[in-house]
Length: 450
Length: 98
Image (cartoon, rainbow over all chains, first blue to last red):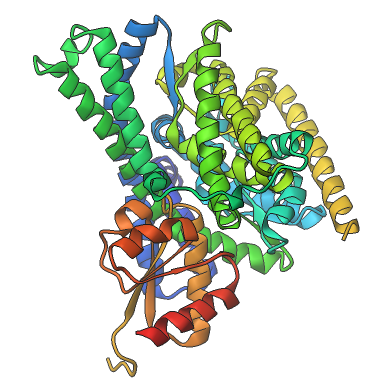
């Protein structure tokens, strides 16, 4: 017994070691050499510890920001940054997240194997983020332990199989059927953008016929854009709030310089978190892919959104800017609606807005790219505000999840889990059957139309 | 340890944050390198830190290529991240030039 106790208490309850164990199993299953297995496992564990270090840094910069927003707008203000909220949530739900991610991937493989939707979701950081959302909302509703993990994993596996399938008719159009699918959990935003484009874009020319000046190049580096915007937000709010609010943080120093440093530190902490995630995924994703291809030989890999950027690079910038505008307008609508103030987070607007631009352009040219991405910007402002109600004490952390699929699935997961354990299982099964049925239907239709 | 070919090439697979699509590039690159028998190691990086890293060659998409051109770093741009043939062709071209 003491051996089992030791394994449970000293290994499985430490998320860093649990994720390391996942990498270890994957690398051994792929028959990697001893040195590759050793370095891969170590890098995964160290990556996780780096992630936690970044989380501590970001907490430090988010609490003065919360105070500033409160002082200026008399509202609760939140910046949706997946990297930050995931790092925070992992501190309390680490082992559940790791288990949901691993088991959820197994469900993805099972669903891809038994349904016509043969999509294997390989965007590792989004699997990690979705596992986090689900662990948080299910746990907050009071379902803990094995039930929390199983319900979370079935939902994760369903979403990972279904979303690439639902957007695939448009993805094929974007990439001229390049043989991969889109696996990025803002898919509701992309489908909406493509539909908006289809609806209003008739006769509009492609964005790729526009020349964009080189001086906008800096917009292409997400960390630079995020830091710039955060500096502007911190300094502007500090000026509006006056020196008194930051006094308790700055220990007598100049408050504007303090705000400037906090903005820069926010950028730095996101860079640290991303570095940690990169170290973890560098080992786990190739292992996932190796395992998936062995089980489902005709699987279509569902990949991260920048894989579609080369098919319409101008639409990416157009979509990003247009999504930010949607986010800013959405922000001003939040107060009157009685919702938390959602400050546009630049990382989600860059990746989601850029991709929404690509999809809007594919169906509706320039008009589609602009308006599709604009609607996406509204969606990724309103949905995160609605999700906050299901996040328990984590909802007070001044940050939240940014992308649409995290939000709607988090809301559904939260609602289902409030029905108690039995209700949650029934709800999860209904959820899985409806979505997998829809994905199968879309896939069969798509294959017939060839 | 005897190595027939000259020194080991260092290749960077670069995307916006070095999280998702850079990894896909890395996996495709590793397949291409293996099939072509090139002695190289591949690492993933984000565009901001990649410009400061020592490397022989950068593989990325069109929109990030400019940052490397400006610094005189050798770069090839890929359109389809999963297409091993495109990767091989462009690698061949880049290696011929040097």
